[in-house]
Length: 293
Image (tube, rainbow, N blue to C red):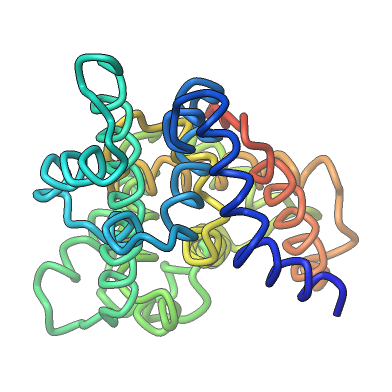
């Protein structure tokens, strides 16, 4: 209850007067002070919060601006806050960069969600080609004898027809698997080989789809913001989401073998442990995750 009361009074009273006092002292608005004080993800995050909690409609709507309208939005903000572009020459550049990151994150979630919602369709030629591409990337020396085959188990699918394994992640799960296998082929072969370990083995494709769900959930609940705001100076795209997925695949494999689970039956326990480890890293405003292969 105390926290709720503090948030109410801070949002409706204290914050306004604190901002007013600081503007009188510094001669700069809150947005300008943030640009003077912070860099990277901290800067964009604080700008986003400042705009979100502003009572000014122009500032509030800035967090939902379309990328094509960012330049006009920056001009409108400068007019509302009486910011002279000749006195503060960097404001326009900094604000545009922040708004592109903010709007880009929202658009990225929409793009990822659209792919996730598409179920794997065996009547869709593009889907079928993508699935066959995954096989050829991972098993270049072994020909797939039939579309529905027990061979799919060799790359970690559960049944004879992989389409049944994509379920909640839709075509996004397959796109991620192909992306990692195509862009990090050697690493994909090594991890696939390790996944066949007689004691510590796991289902490569199933775990890959599971990690797609992890990446998706972290994007959805906005835990990926610090990472993407630091990693991408401009607009976050699907390419950056795929890169984060690749990081998860590589790091999970290392984590699994370091932990040495008793059996695959403990997968959910260790998956959650890995999830918590990644979330802790992402909570750091200076987070920088590097895929070292």
